[in-house]
Image 1 (cartoon, rainbow, N blue to C red):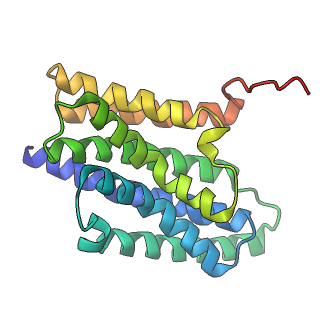
Image 2: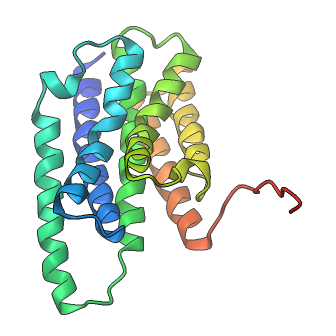
Length: 216
């Protein structure tokens, strides 16, 4: 990979880590977890997807243990969000954070789908389309899946706002143009914009996949 690709991978991982940590912490606060619970929710959301990605790709030990920068970013962001939330809620106790959570979550999802695909390419699996797209998707949704599992909630990807579907589409939009010769940063901009835009529109208009009617 080129120096530009390496820089974009690092940037995507930093942005995704901070955004997912913010979204996970706000989700923990919204679910009325205590300080430690909200902190764990933020950090798990931020690094969980990368942890699963590295296990799938056979990267051991996973990068979060080799490069503690990501855990540090997640921890600092989580604490900052809790402090900010406490200060804001004192002034506006009825303030709702759904829109803010959706924004951070959308940015994190887009960033981590891209970084997951780039990591797969960096590890030499770029020719394996199924594996690379799968790794991109699992990097994007893995942290939220672990967060919801730990908190005992139904995973967002199973029922809310075409979450996993957007991740799959975004991964395909990023991966295949690169295979056809498009520069990765152009493809990255397109995929990033697509994921964020569709996620925000889905949250605003309550777009969901059809649910199965059991007939009861």
